[in-house]
Amino acid sequence: MKDFNHPWTSREDTLRLLLERSQFQPRIETIPVRDSLGRITAREAIARNTLPNSPASMLDGIAIKSANLSDELAVKIADLSAGIPGTESWQEGKDYVFCNTGVGIPDEFNTVVRIEDVEIDDDGRLRIMSKPQPGQNVRPEGSMMQSGKVLVPAYFQLGPGQLGLLTAGGITEVAVLEKPRVAIIPTGNELVPAGYKPPRGMNVEFNGTMIEAQVKTMGAEARLYPITHDDPQDIRNVLNDALDWADIVILNGGSSKGTDDKAMEVLASIGEILVYEVDYGPGKHTTVTMVGTKPIVGTVGPTIGAEYAVEWYVLPLINKYLSLPTIAPRRLQVKLLDEIPAPTPFDFYARLMVNRVNGTYVAKPTGSRNASLVSQMMSNAVLHIPKASQGFTAGEIVDVELRYPLEWINTIDE
Image 1: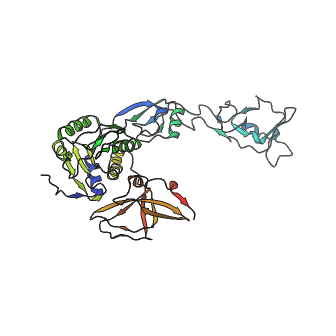
Image 2 (image 1 turned 60 degrees about the vertical axis):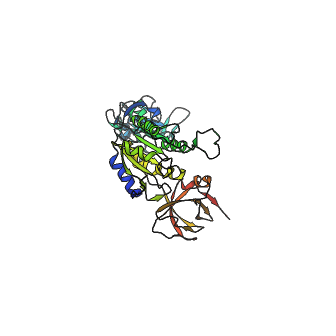
Image 3 (image 1 turned 180 degrees about the vertical axis):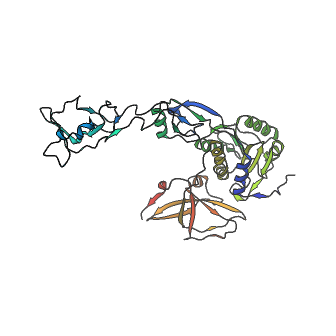
C-alpha cells in the first residue's frame, strides 16, 4: 500500500532544496556572433581591433589645423571679438579638408568644424561662421575600443548591442555556454498523442507541448519524449535515458494517489526524493528527486499545477546553469470584482483576469474548480491566497503577480 503520510514542503523550501543540491557543469561551444543573440558568454570577449584606428571626425564637416586658430594675423578684424579666423585665402587640401562622420582625417588636421557652420562662395572662398575650439569634434585613436581590451565580460547575456560591439571588435565567433538540456517525460495510460482524437475516457497529451515551449522560452534545449505508460519498468527505462542526456529532467504525471500512479516508487529506487508533496495548490503533488546532483522535477498532470512547477522551479535551475538571475514577475494592485474564498487548508494560487476599467485595475477570478482550461490559460494574473487567510471580499484591493506585461492588459472605458 502506498504511504501518503509524507510531510508537505513549502514553495520556498522546495526551491531552496533544489538550488542547494543541484550542481551543473556547463558545456561550452563556439558559435558565429550572428547566431549568438540571447546566449551567455563563457569567457571574456577580447577586442582584436582598435577603433578608430586613426583620429576620426565625429560629424560631417571640414577638418582644419588648430595652429591656424592661434595665428593672430589670420583673424579677421571684423570678427576679432568672436575669434573667428580669416579663411578666405585657405586652400582645400592644404588648410582644410572635407570629412565625414566616423571617417579618419589626415594627421596634420586635428580640429573639425561642422558643415552647418561653413560657407563656400561661388569663387571657392571658405568662411567659418563660428569660433572653433582646438581639437573639437575629433574622436581620438582608440577612443571607441582598443585591441586586447575586454569588450564583453564572461557570463553576460548577449543582446543586439553586444553583437554589434563584438563585430566591430573583429570577432566573428564567440564562446558561449551551451544551452542546458531539459528532458520532458509525459506519463499516463489515459493519454493519446497530439493529433489523435481521444477515445471516450482518454485525453490528449498536451502538457508536454506546453512545457517544451516554456523550457525553450527560458533559454534551454528541450527534448520531449513520447508518452510513457504507467508501468514502473517503462518509467525507469525512460528516466535513465533522460538522465544520461539531460541536465534537468521533468517527469509529468504519475505522482498522485491514483492506482496507476507509479512514478514515486520508481523515483525512490533511482534517487533521493527530497519533496513528496508541496503545501500549496494547484500542483499539490509536485515532487523533487535528486539522482546524484541532477534534479528531477515531478510535475502534476493537471495543467495549471504543471505550469506553475516549471515556472517556479525549472526556470531558477536553468538560470543557475546559465549564471543568470531569476527576475521576479511584475506585481500590481487590483480591485476584486467578486469574492474569493479560501478554498483549501493550504496555500492556493488563483488565476485572475485583470482589466483596466475607467482608469482602475479590476480583476475577476477564473480559477474555480469547474473553470474552463481556456479561461485559466488565458488569464493574466495570479493571486496568492495564504492558508491562514479567510479569502478576499468583493471590492478588496489585493496584490497580484502579472503573467504578461502590464501593457497587454485590456482597457475598457464605460
